[in-house]
Image (tube, rainbow, N blue to C red):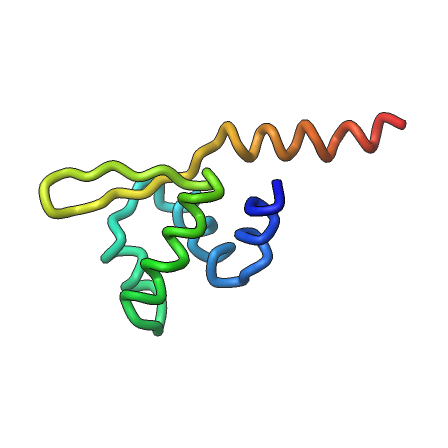
Length: 86
């Protein structure tokens, strides 16, 4: 879970997750177009999000498509909600 919370601690990565939640599957280029940073910077953020399993990717030709991994968010919610029960 350490990687997960580290990934969520960055505002740019949270914005990327918001974009994916709002728009659904997006290419790395489409994600980049929503930010005023370099492509390599967005690529690094996507790598961290992928490594923490918050997003998954699939390659189609020359494009890489990213989407939210909903099951990880469900696990987080389940973990957080157990504290409310006590």
